[in-house]
Structures are given as C-alpha cells and as structure tokens.
Length: 481
Image (cartoon, rainbow, N blue to C red; front, side, top):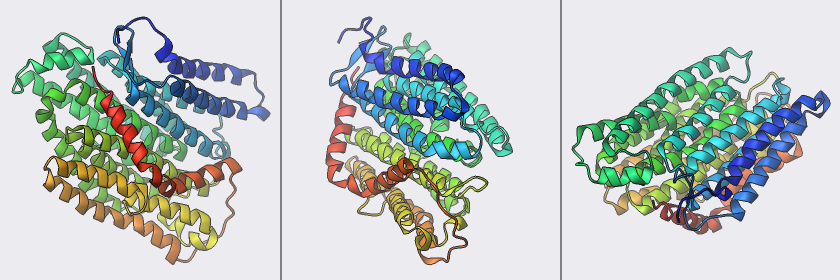
C-alpha cells in the first residue's frame, strides 16, 4: 500500500507511550498506601495495547511515515506476544519488588517504555527506526538491571551490560553506515534492492555484514558475544531478569528478520556461514557450561545462550519454513523462560532468593503442585515430549533437514541431549532429595493462577500447535517490501 501520513498503524505505540507518561505523573499524586495504582494502570495499558493491535490486525503490509514504519502480520503477532509476556512479568513482580523496598512506579514505567522500543523494532522498515527502537529498549533495560541500587551485584551487572551494549550498538551503526554507503539508502526495502546489484564478493559489503552480525550476536547473547549474559541474569533483580529473558527475545527475532531477511536475504550465502558459527558455538558452549552451574539464574543464562543458538539454526536455513520455525521457537522460549523465572520469584521471599539449585531439594514433598509446574517447564526447555518445547526443537531440526544441513541437525540433537542433563537435574532435586527446610510460600492469588497457567501451557497448547505454526507462516509470508 502507498505510504502516507496515517496514524492508525502507530496507535498502539502512541497509547503505550502516553500511558507510561501518565503513570509517571499520576504516581506523584498518589499516597504510599495506594502505590499499586501504577501497577494496575500498567496492566491496563498492556491489555489496551493488545486490544488496539488485534482490532487492526493487518493482513496486508501498511507503510507510514515515508515507509519508515510498517504494520504487517509479523509485527502484530510479535507485539501481542510482547504484551502477554510483559503482563506476566509485571504480575510476577508486584510482591517481589515490594518485599525488597523497590516498589516504585518507575519500575513499571521503564518496562512500558521498553515495550514501546520493542514495538518500534517489530515494525521498523528503516535503519533509523530500527536503531531508535533498539536503543529505547536498551536504555530501559540498563536501568532495570540497576534498579536495586543497594546491590553491588546489580550495579556491576548494569555497568557490564551498558558498556557491552554500547559497543554492540556502535558496531551496528558502523555496519549500517557501510550498507548506506554502498546502496545510498536507509530504507530496508531499498537497501535490499541495492544489495542485489552488488557482487557478493564486495569487501565493503562483507565488512558491513560482519559488523551487523556481530552486533546481533551481542544483542541476542550468542557465543562468542555472550559474556554479559550470565552476569546480568545473576546480578539483576529476578523480576528484571524475567523481563530481559522473555519479551526482548521476541524483539530480537524481529530485528533479525528485518535486517537479515527483509534487507539482506539476497546475500544469504554470505551471512549464512557467519550464523552457522554463532549457532553451533552457542548450542555447544551454552549447554556444556550450564552443567557446571549451581546457581539457577546462571544456569538459565547459559540455557538462554543455547536456545538462541537453536533459534539461529532456523534463521540460517534461509527458507520460509526455517523462518517460521525460528519464530515459533522464540515464541515458545519466551513463555518457558517467563515461567522458569516466575518460579524463582514465587519461591523467593524477603531476605531470601530461591536461586540456588539446593533450594529446590524436596520441593515435591513441600509443594507438589509447584514441583509439577517446574517439572513441566524443565521438560519443555529440555525438549522432552509431549511438551511444546519438543515440537519447537523438532520444527527447527526438520527445517535443517529440508535444506540438506544434516550435519547441523545432528549437532543440534546431540547437544539437546547434553542440555537435558541440567534440566533433569532440577527435577531430580525436587523429587528425589530431602527438603532442607519448609518455609511458607506466600503469593497473591493472581500470581498463583498465572504461574499455574504458565506451567500448564507447556502441555495445554499442544492441540493448537498447528494453528500457532500457521500464524507464524502467515507472519513470515507478510515480510514483503
């Protein structure tokens, strides 16, 4: 459709941004006894944004602002998933931040502005728009990591994250500038047309691709650019870690699709080799190093690295089925990760963080329901049938086999088996070890209901896997510039 000044596609972004500003102002006039007003308004904002996005769900790409912003099926689906995961993070966060004296409106406002950044990334059709969304998200993440100001671990994690994030952003800008020099345009569709006219052996093109791949590797936490992941996951408040590990991964998928598929698919043969290295190293090192971890948050950090490797395997296939598999995988992963960190938050209390593996000893004897939910989440992360995590891994491996990458499929299967060890170790501790103590678990009803739904979804979603995969196929099919 022709581009023009049409605000309809950006109404959800405008709504979330305005509500975030409103919450910040309203909090100034609310007494301490009504501090949950910001929390309630944040949830209402996410629900409202979901309604606005679904109401104008786009089957045909709509370009606005001089083709800098696009509203298509992929962006709408990613946005709805971002709202859902952020909603879950906020519900899990309420009692956790209150018990640690950091229940402030700014926490939820930072999360909402991060959502705006992710929404812009999902709809970016221009290098400047994409970079704007990425930096808006990143700046809020840095602040959320350091939100617990009295914690030396959080401060150190935020500094590392900020320095490496700034380095990655600089690399992305440098790569984009080289592509701009070659094509004379910043609009992703025009860049694709320009790149198609350039020989794949062009040195400047290869260098531009290298810088973009490196920056994406940093943002996704892929090996060898993963050094920030375990420190940030461990040092940040668990609620901030839950946020970082879920919704931004959806935005990461969007930025990979916009850049590598939307703009640079014609040089797939060049960037495929780079992605293969990142994917294999991430799967291997992530799964092997996770075995040595005794801290559950650090174990999940290395688990994230391995999952990003699996996600990249779908991307490197270079086929619609591969892209759909990658999208389905990242959707499933965001829900699994949210549930895993949700369990840590649930079992934690003031003065105690349930983040050591030993804290889960005998959980089945103390709280069999929560042990069962954790079992489902661990099985799904490990890819054990009949959970949805198994189908997510299977779809990626099938996509690899379809394009003849049998060796990569074998590597993926082998390290998936290796990775199953540390997930099943958590199950063993819960079901076969004696509990060390029996402290009460106090959690609000909404959190208990949501964590139950989160865990059970690993099984309950299976009858609708085909529908979800069809949605992913439609989303990938809408990526036409």
